[in-house]
Length: 144
Image (cartoon, rainbow, N blue to C red; front, side, top):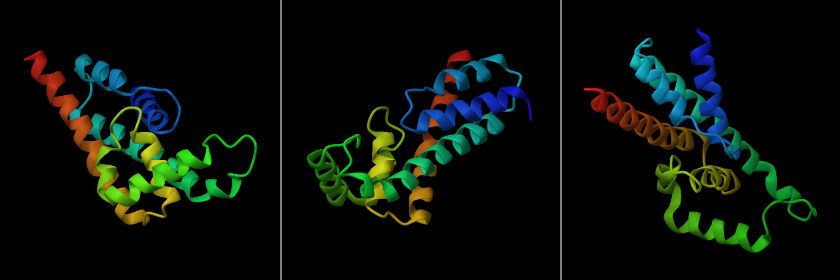
């Protein structure tokens, strides 16, 4: 696998965690280079992004045991508010996991709420693949 694919994978992985990274620019740059097969770029970006979201889900599964700690990053009121929103909208809210700013915390809350892994992976994969697909269509359509 070429270094470009590794770079795309790690950019997509990091962007899906709570780190302030972006993978869209990397994907667009590789698409515009016209050196790589579009479907392989989409698959690598989607896989990296879904695995990054899986890290958030996994962290969410165990994060509450630390909520009494001084360093805990979320106040009890914010955690309860997120929990209520997730209960209200349910697992379908994971379709928004691709949205900047809210998507990453949403995947963390899914872990806190004990969302079943299979359903989590299915919905998040659909959402993330659709986002990268639309981005690729927009990029390649713009190129003509």
